[in-house]
Image 1 (cartoon, rainbow, N blue to C red):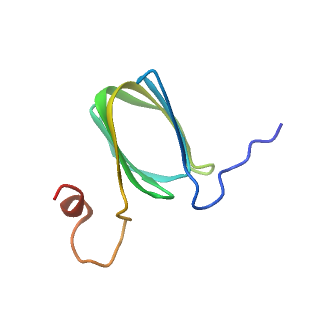
Image 2 (cartoon, helix red, strand yellow):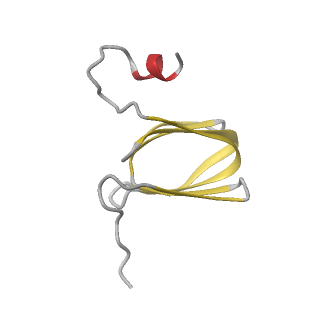
Image 3 (tube, rainbow, N blue to C red):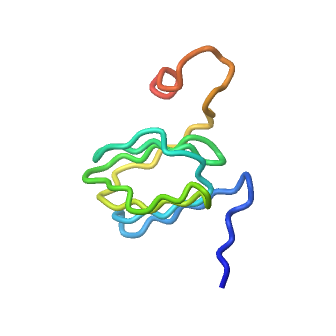
Length: 95
């Protein structure tokens, strides 16, 4: 069976037992460490915070990622990378 990539502008997140996250509709992983992962999705930025976070599988061609660890929060922002407001992304995110 052929796997289909999510159409542009669509994004799906599956969280199992606060320990496994599967995402599609991602365009980039901007930063990651064991406590925080910043992901650019088709529908905005997503910040995942927790403990012992690991990117287990990343397929940018398909726009998919699997993450494991203890998830404490998922936070979306409509701010897109490279907008024209003149301030940095992190400056806007952490206002």
